[in-house]
Figure (cartoon, rainbow, N blue to C red):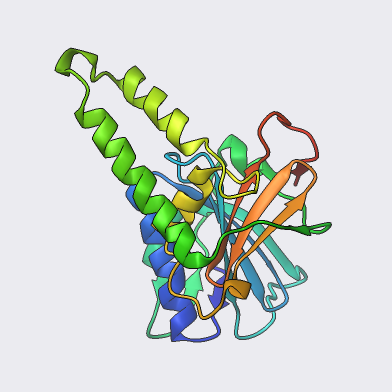
Length: 225
């Protein structure tokens, strides 16, 4: 069994927390792992937000498994969480699973350019609080017979498809970042960045990234790996 040696206890705890949050939204969640050198990227897709969440994990030593020097596998998020040993600072890689469709289509590795107009971290958190309160208010105002799944979804699409500040980033991406623990306290707004590459936008924070396709560009400029 392949065992990943994580950089420190903090990396192990953060990986476990990220997996736990994904499982909160989908008990059957899968994650795609890509490791090369001393970096591990963990990709997940919380279904409520329609975004791709990426958690970068530092490894204590370069990944190596026989003649293979890279790791690329899709596994059960629940099994990986159980395999994280925060005391030993390791994570055993579970057996591969048949990946969901999103796992075959990832953002590009390079070509990212910074986009202007991203609000400060406190403003982003305030935006999330405001739209959550609006959703709750609008749904509570519905007559009981109108409080259907279709109507709730319609209100949700109206609210979370709005864009943030003067950027093309949808609010749902910021909401996902907040819900997954990526918008924790930051010293400066410089810790945050909005990047673009082809059809993709990526909200980068010190704790992880949220990637989403630009509205209207469909499957253009994706990276199938």
